[in-house]
Image (cartoon, rainbow, N blue to C red; front, side, top):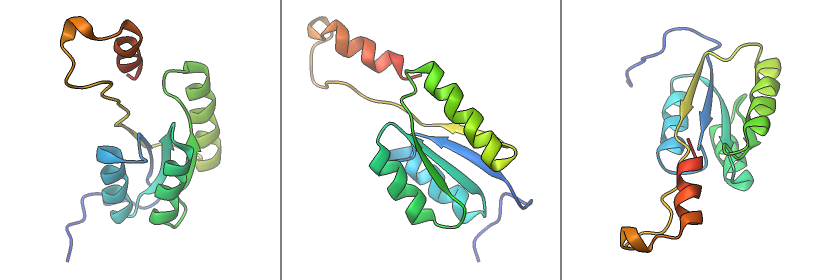
Length: 117
């Protein structure tokens, strides 16, 4: 029997970066605890695949966290749909180019990594 860490029903969590990596694993874990998940990612297909895998009342939304207006609109819509958002797990992140000497990193690549906060 798996341990149950969340002991209340109707718990709603937004997971940002839910299409892959740590965000996907967080969404899977929380869903296994009976949590309703809003899977957010800039990768629309990935977010939708996560919500489909989780089943139940999980939903998917595509949003780029570097676009603050889009984030606010998306969160407002989820809050209206769910009634309440109990928690947010932020796992959004990109690595940019790797194995490049720091002084050779293009400024646009550097900025792109730090816009994802």
